[in-house]
Length: 89
Image 1 (cartoon, helix red, strand yellow):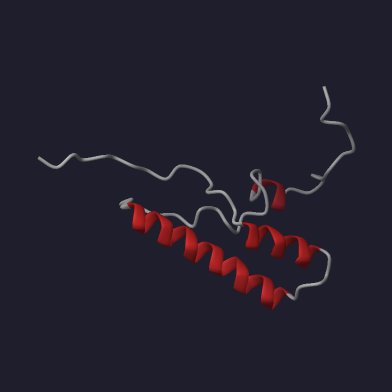
Image 2 (cartoon, rainbow, N blue to C red; image 1 turned 120 degrees about the vertical axis):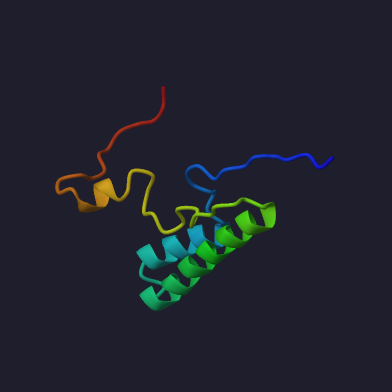
């Protein structure tokens, strides 16, 4: 008898180091938008391939192209931004 294991992709996959480095380089102006988009698209392809290899029946883009975990909302609402502060307790 074959055991059936149910799996679903919920939420974001971890971003690969290559994508995180490209984001930093693009933000610093050292990587063109075209080159950044190539890495960004590569990360989505990798996320989809990982899920397909894992046998997940429905795949997502892994939210690789999301600017932050609160993005699309904070990307389109005016007046949202970073504030200074400390994360130390």
